[in-house]
Image (cartoon, rainbow, N blue to C red; front, side, top):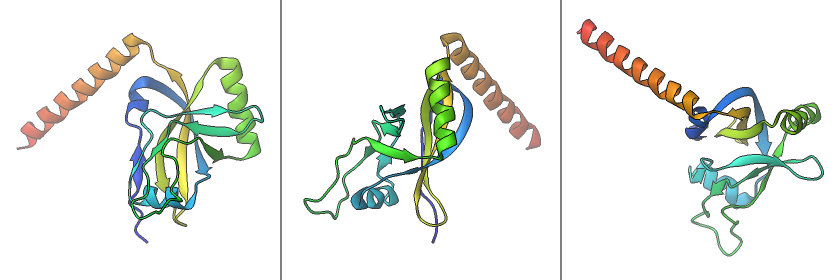
Length: 153
């Protein structure tokens, strides 16, 4: 089976300073996984949050309705539970409560078994001057790549 589903959150690297990364399973309904396999999902505006029973949920994840489903279709912006090991959940919960960090989804992909997984990261919001530095670094890399390309030709 060719695994080509790789839905990314491109804003995350610009908006946040990423610390630790984790891979979590996602609890999905039948039509949700079919829509993800079609590539009809977005995690650009989403974030992760703990409920009162210390379970981790992804909020604002957009999974469009499956095109071939009947009236049993899912809600596009429902909260979806993330599956992690208990020690990873405790570590994330402690960091979020004490340090004021946030948990940001980076990408959704299918593993070798065909299961949907989400890569999440413990993140700290960047200040405006950090974002300016990121833009300057990106522009410098682009200019350097142009110079190298022109020099090699």
